[in-house]
Image (cartoon, rainbow, N blue to C red; front, top):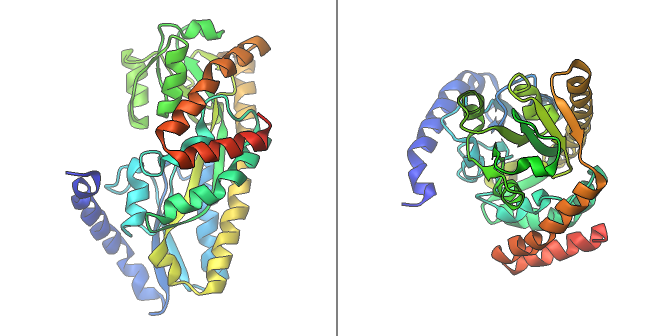
Length: 337
């Protein structure tokens, strides 16, 4: 039985809950208005990325004069695993998604997450521009319109155990956020342990794993009481596409479609900027308060990490087919590497 069939019961339950929750809203808007539901991965309404998505929803309602109204659902508030947001939007169970866990559904978009490929935000923007047609096409095959994306800050390893060099990764059990991060850990002697975000706190408490791969502004802040060391090495950015169901999008007037695209482009840039600054501030706070021992990887360590991971980039692309190989070549050309 495939994933789509296995999740059908969940889709139906989610649709029923959404329909019930939206009933009052439907009675207050004009018959011609479109009422959508948006699902995000984060569970906190105060998170900068969630606030940015909310601004998009508020903005389109205002700018369309109520022609489209979108209700926000936080991660975990619907019986839809956040790893299945791509499929939920494709099936029109929700019309809009913040699709951070897309890799099982549109693998090529994960090229932007290859370890040690992108060194700074300028690199990310160049690579994202190259990847846009590939990203758009991958989602289009699933009946989805890709509108834009924001970037989480560069991620790196955090641990309860001493971690002040790449050598300290050896033998440590860390929870990565992607298979690509897991490959990085393995190549430096670490042991990747899979776990959902909701399992991290208990996993750290019980010693299921020693640490995580994350950013200061994300998991670093969330689990700072349990993590004592952070190795600052530019492993990879996390990209989160904003997507909508194509059939629902096509029902919107062309001017409303254009306004929604513009809102997403503007707000995703703001979200990226806010998250990057929050990461800088959180890292400084960890050091200043003594909450963690924060170590910047040496130039030699960064160079060694890149040397080790470069062959993996090609392995990754070849495993995903000619299109991924072509996309990687274009990205590397744009970056000059």
